[in-house]
Amino acid sequence: AVVAGTEPLYLDAPESPGKLAGLAEKAAILLLLWLATAGAVRSRRRQRLAILLVLSPGAVTLAANRWLDFPYGASKAVAHAVPVWGLALGLLAAAAWRVRPAARALAVFGLVLVLVLSLRASIHVANRTARAVPGYDAAYPSIPSLTSRLERAAVVVVDEPAPWRYTWIAYFAGENRVLPLKLDHPLPSEAGARVYRLLDLRVPAEATRADRAAAASPFFALIPAESPAQRR
Image 1 (tube, rainbow, N blue to C red):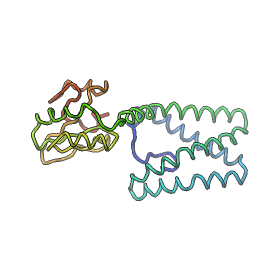
Image 2 (cartoon, one colour):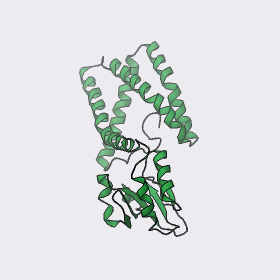
Image 3 (cartoon, rainbow, N blue to C red):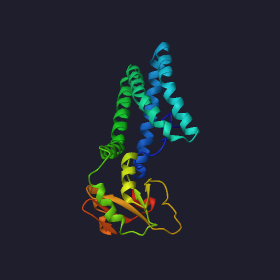
Image 4 (cartoon, helix red, strand yellow):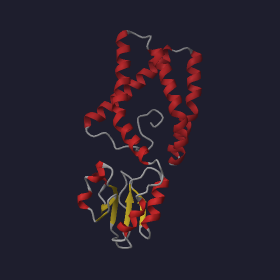
């Protein structure tokens, strides 16, 4: 399912809201599969074998990571697979272009639908990536003034895409345990310890939640951590 694109290896972005968006995604997947099939049928035998050979390493690697429940290897496989898959889809789409005009229109509609549905997740991932560069933030030294107001057993969760930024935050948090925030994972259980989420007040979407802050500085705020449904 991961290799076919019908199921994510893991969630890089929140799922699309609403049943209509889910149905549109399923329709886009079916249109892409139809486009690839039509292109494969119209392609020459040598071209089909070449595409299969090029796609196999990335597909097998991603499938193995899924079966072994080892997501760390996916970052290397995806970096090689994405440009190759894009090239293969382009070749299959060019071959499918030789079908009837009505089928051409359907193929174009499928590609446009995929691009539109990908925008929300793409923007989310791009924003997270932009936050990861540079790795050090001059505002980090203000974190100790926040954690000093918490009990020593309190746990702090942070939404940071890059491990080096997470490590800097954990360093400045001092004795409080710091954990990465994961959208679909329950809050950590620390024998009754309170759990707080670190907000970056320079990010508009996070600044709007600072009204419940247990501690705040000009750059960051700590609020009681939410349930998975409230984090979205």
